[in-house]
Length: 337
Image (cartoon, rainbow, N blue to C red; front, top):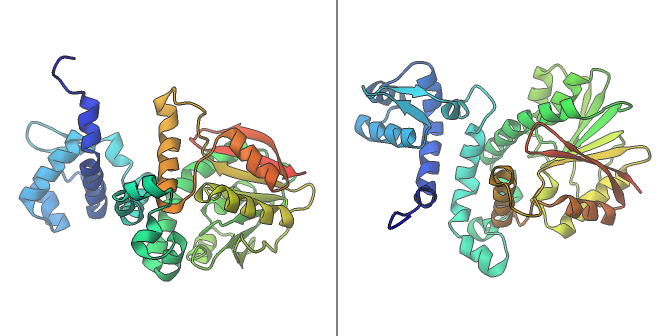
């Protein structure tokens, strides 16, 4: 290698710049505009109300990251990367904007977590992530939009992989505005559902369910999974819930679910698995980065298969199967012991 420094190190060093370029592109809806055929910096500057010179340099920066392609005449075109950030399809746009609010500032104080083991969010904002959402409807709406973006992908994989035989009533625990429940019910016309969440989480649920033609098949129930889930069902779904919390509170959530369940009800967690060892970076990247984000922002964690089995056992549940899906998420099924 001689005196040459590794290119991977240079890209890592510039990671924060690349992320802010992506945030700016999302806020200006540049992926949409370029996909529509607006290819020059001058044209895009007029459409976005930005400074043409600054935007031209920003577009070039995005091209360096592979976000857009630039030709010899200075025209820009869409790529697979930029298409994933468009506003008219599930991708990365809303999660990018959400992280620019909740995550970027918190990650700037990573050393606090490394020194104390405590999440940073509450130290910065003076309240938990969930309390901030409860008092800030704009923040809650952005969070829900990001969750819909992720859930749209995961729900397709789940529906294609899971056997819903015998399920007549689904309870979506902390299901937000109902993206997962909507997908499940649309694929299973004989089911009814219950959407259970805090009031802030349910914001926009009625509109989504009505638009999907499900207003007569779903009941909305407000409540906290730390208190009780006053709903019976055949299948209890929790997507990206347990990873938000430390082990003690994760067991508390699962115990609340167990108390609501009666045989032969089942519980399914949709979560990422941490590998036991890092031997395939592409496979581990999403789960390891998510684990770190949970640590810094919420105090939660991603877990291995064995760690999930241990949590379930502590809550009076037995893991019956883990289902590999066409996704970086897995379905973890459990039944009462």
